[in-house]
Amino acid sequence: MDVLSDVIAVMRVGRPVSARVRRHAPWGRRYPASPGAAFHVVLQGTCWLLPANGVPVALSPGDVVLLPRAIDHALADLPSSPLTETCCVPDPDRPSFENREEFPPGAAGLAAGLSSVTLCGAYQFHDSLAHPLLSGLPEIVHVPAKPGHHAELRAAVELLGAELENPRIGAGAAVPALLDVLLLYVLRAWFADQPVPGTTSGWAVALSDPAIITALSGIHDDPSRSWTVEELGKRSGLSRTAFARRFTALVGRPPLAYLTWWRMVLAQRLLRASELPLSVVAREVGYTSEFAFANAFKREHGIAPGRYRRQGRTTA
Image (tube, rainbow, N blue to C red; front, side, top):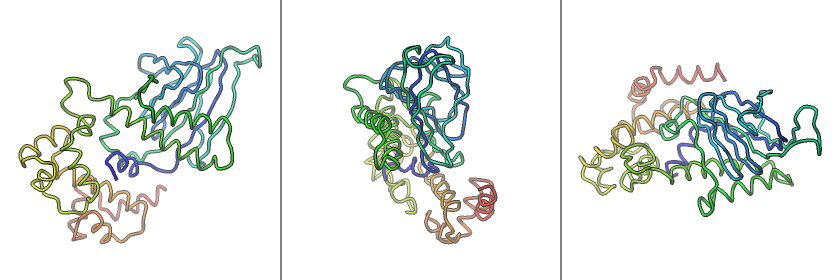
């Protein structure tokens, strides 16, 4: 896997949920913070994103907004419209999508104002598996629709809108798949628009740096390998010292510290999602000794791997 796909695959829990809604002005809907990431796509008309603590953001047709940490926010036809209801996405334990129409109180049909069609939903992420690539994103990732920019994202939005507007046989498989594609394309588009001039650190820069992405790809492709800084540097075409300095500056951790951390993230997932013996989990993430693995896991997470697995079962 490439780094972005790998990160999302590890963090994701369950399937995305969504709702396509045509709303007639005046309207305003609150969205409370919830685990995972919220998203909004404007399919038709215009509206405003209203962060609980922030400046309103005008949204136009084709605009996509991702809120990686699902902060309290609202959508409305105008910033001044009253927020009269709390709107929640469908239950994540029952993956589904909805298609509905809403009118302001006392209005219907021709009596209603201009309409906006939005796609709202959520991706469920496991908080303890958060990767800095995503946790380092701003609270609001806004990818505006611009002619000639991010054609793949525009195509995904159009396909998703068409599928939801007129659900046909196979929609239950098509919609979640398109929502997965949407998430990848939103992140790809945002990272492609970075870094801004003068930026010298951070994941946006790391993902565009050939040497660093080569090293990261090696770690993610084969995390159980006994990587050394020299080997990663050689793979990246840099000296050991130059590679270690650049990797640490961009990624935020030294190469082997990142390797160990990523191994422990993978171990968390295996412990929660499988019944593999600890010795097998240890080998899967690069440890020949169960004892060495247990010590590394406890140093990273403050809890022994066996206890971590048992706690996961009791809270599931």
